[in-house]
Amino acid sequence: MKKTQYVVVGLGRFGASISKELIKLGNEVLGIDRDEEAVDEMSQFLTHTVVADATDEDVLKSLGVRNFDCAVVAIGDDIQSSILAAIVLKDLGVKKVVAKALSELHGKVLQKIGVDRVIYPERDMGIRVAHQLNSPNLLDYIEISKDYTIAELSVPKRLCGLTIRELDPRAKFGCSVVAINKQTGVIIAPTATDVVNENDMMVIIGTNVQIDKFESEVIR
Image (cartoon, rainbow, N blue to C red; front, side, top):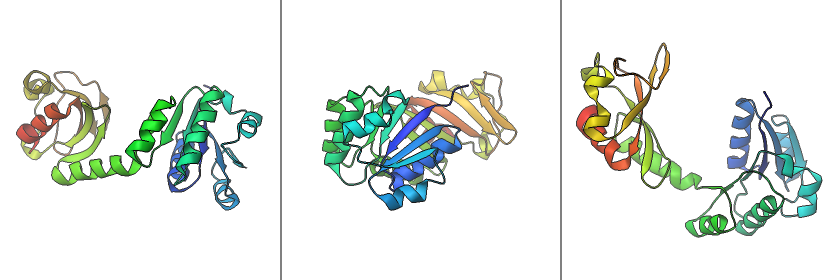
C-alpha cells in the first residue's frame, strides 16, 4: 500500500507534534521551516526536512509539493506567512490543505482562500477539556461539525451487562453507539445484542443536544 505523503510547513510545537504523530501512523512527512535549528531538531524524526521559505512559490515547486497528498500549514504566530503559504500550496495544486488558525478572523481568511480544513488547536483543546471537566464519565469529545459530535463515554457500574438494545440510544435519544472499546479489543458497529461492561468505552455519535441528554440521563 502506498504511504500517504504529507508536507508540514512550520516545525514549532504544533507542527512538530503533528509531524511525529503522522510518522508514527506510518506516513511519509516532509517538514519545512525557515529556522535551521528547528529543522535540524526534527530531521531525525521525519522522512525529509528542508530549511526553506514556504511563501516562495518557486521553492515549493522545486520541492515537488504538488505531488503530496496533504499539506499542513502549522506556522506559529506569523499570520501573513500562514496565509501566503496556504495560497501558494493551493495554487500549486496540493490535493488537500489543512491550516492552523490563531484567531476566528485568521480562520475566516483561510477558508476564503480555499483551505480545506481550518484547525483551532487552542480553542478546540479548551472546549474538549471543559467538557471532560464538566462530565466525569466523558473521556473525549470531538466536534465534527457545528451540530454533530463524537463522544467517548465510560460505562458506569450500574449499566454493566446491558445490551445495546436495552440501552437503545437511537430510539430514546437519536444518537448511535458506533464502537465499544473493551479490554479485549474494539467492537466496531456493535449489534443490538452486544453487551457493555463496567469501564468499557462507548463511542457515540449524534448532535450535541442528543449526546448531552444521553450522558446526563443514562451515564451519570
